[in-house]
Figure 1: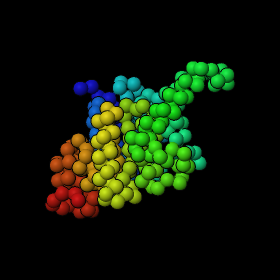
Figure 2: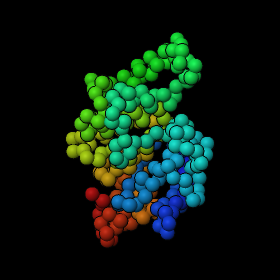
Figure 3: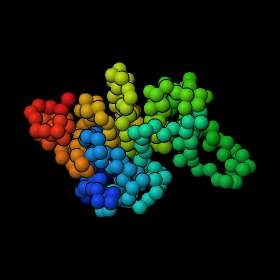
Figure 4: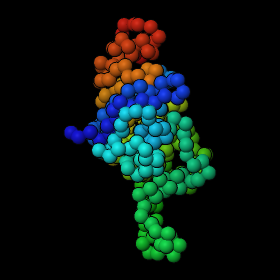
Length: 260
């Protein structure tokens, strides 16, 4: 199976601090992989490197064989990489529907002339976008909130809306940054089911960051563990949770047993 997202030898320093060192990761189509590590390990920095927020000092990042380094974030989104954020970044003063409609326009093919003249092609495209946005909201049980301001949604609904907005860009790879943050046990259980549903229904490849190690261990095929910007373990949950380096990174000292 060909690699969809290929990251090799990526490094980034801020001043004298090595944020990420010689990072490598391969995602094949349909993979659901986890990226974990203690606070400050470099997890979100990796997401920022993939999406063009940061440019690495060294290394290569390619999506489906196309180099991504040097492209601005919106071009990387157009190439097929979508993400959510650790701190929710919705358009709070727009409606729930408009948050998704904005993202749908990434794939739209409107001309300025068509928009100004309100041509049949332009209007038809807008109707198609609105239908697709409503379909996504219904999938996430947000259809009845379509006309509400995004900032007025409960926290869990804002998280789901952010994922729906990311899916509206029709990505190949979805990066989820701390989607379980602030959720209770029941909400996390529903989130795990939702992530599997998204992967299977949308035929997506997913890379997931979360501090809830149990969530990651429970749903991911493969897990990469970072500590101080360096990869200390890669493998299935059953191996990673027993790795002495992983246990030490989380507990602060060598220990026997699994990461809890």
